Amino acid sequence: NAGVTQTPKFRILKIGQSMTLQCAQDMNHNYMYWYRQDPGMGLKLIYYSVGAGITDKGEVPNGYNVSRSTTEDFPLRLELAAPSQTSVYFCASTFSENTEAFFGQGTRLTVV
Amino acid sequence: GDSVTQMEGPVTLSEEAFLTINCTYTATGYPSLFWYVQYPGEGLQLLLKATKADDKGSNKGFEATYRKETTSFHLEKGSVQVSDSAVYFCALITNTNAGKSTFGDGTTLTVKP
Image (cartoon, rainbow over all chains, first blue to last red; front, side):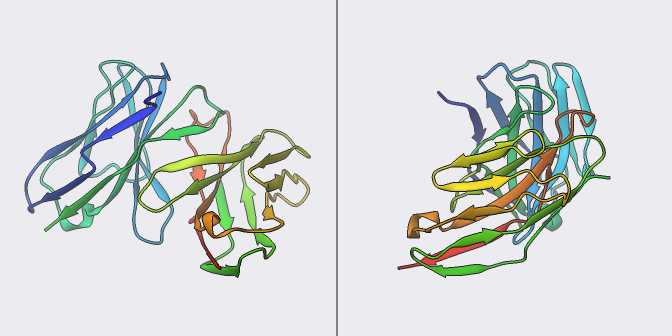
């Protein structure tokens, strides 16, 4: 079982560049989430989606965009990368509103 | 809003020592409670969960009991191993919040042989 798959695992960006972090799940989960994890900190929610075609902002959405054209995929777009976006990014999905989250392996992003 | 407070780390123990990591929460409604574990370089994975008051979640020798009266969900293990070294996150979900989890800041556990 693949579960939640994130690509790439590592990436270095220059200030002002753009990129898309890919996330795909094969569990037919409607709910998907993007978090960032800064060193020694918990997870902060960037964006989430409750189903295909529906997205909404989390705690820290500035500088990011998402789309959800299919149930399986939930890409996160960084426009005009800034050093403050250096972090580890995790994608997660849940089966329903009150069940546990399944996480991808993470993408470690450095903006220089 | 919802929040989760974990005991501050890092925690360093010798092998076979007893482990407690405290977790308290505030939430609107009736939350489900979770402990996740993150091994180095990996994503979070579910360790155990409890969905209603007085439920006990358990897995791999770890236990936690949902205490509504003290709004707590402390993680315990009777005898830790070196392989338990990881970061542990307490989290909650309420069914009024679109499945969004609220996480504590995490507690780093190091177990020495």
